[in-house]
Image (cartoon, rainbow, N blue to C red; front, side, top):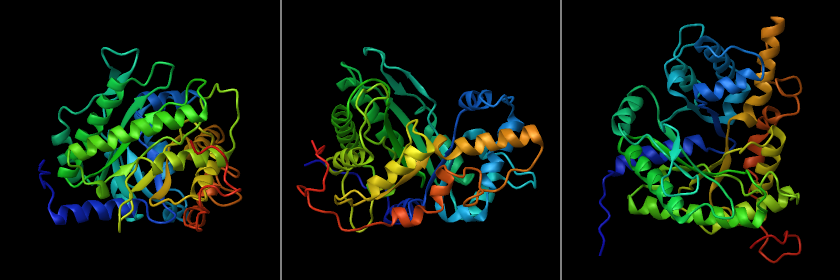
Length: 371
């Protein structure tokens, strides 16, 4: 009989579980501010801002020093390596500032995607070399969770079995290394929304990818209660001719999760959805639909958004740079985004705590997309 080597002590498991639960406490989610220098360059180009280290610091300072009302809505913040060691205008390291606001500090540790040989343009993610040492240092420097992103795409021939298994094992190896250092790993097997695939195809692929990943996590003896999952919502491709409702997207998403993600008791696994290029409004409405979906959901379902939380903030920052006027902090009707996700965040606790008893499958009120 296989022997699962107990490489984590009960104390280590408790630390990991406690960190994960703090991040996804009721009403809280994750601000993904871990864009690479290259990704920030694209964002800044859209507002005609120079991509300098100082400008990146100033912009992220704007996010991290927002109105105190945002603190109850953000459980954790994912940082890029550069940001991890930057300071506020007052000389306080960002990590210390975030911790003082009761936000858990996270760090992006992957090194980006590279071509996967033997496939039709598919990728794997690099960064395992030296990860053990980097995790040890990041833990000393204040990081309590990490993020690693793998990418898969849907075409008539992909994702291939090779790509699914390779990326699942990379995520599992990363997660195992993180947990050895007391760092909660976010596992992110992102399925890109590019293409013309329909909702059913995305649900099928999502189920296959998640099933393979949880098999790999088990093989690598990863402690599931000390992890967070960052999946895509199940949506049709951007070029799909059919428009699906928020309720159909929610039903397909929750169904895929119910078929693949283990329900843990008494600790619930945290599922922090990526926005996948959705607008602020789309990401908010779809997350609300998922949380109110009339199916049993034995996990904490919340957000880990980047652009869907920052788009309006970026525009406001650009306006301030142009006019010299200070940006108004994120408040309800007169915040940075009057109609966007920041406004939604102030109502997140109510939305995410909506645990109304789900109706049984087969109810006449259920959309007919449970495949």
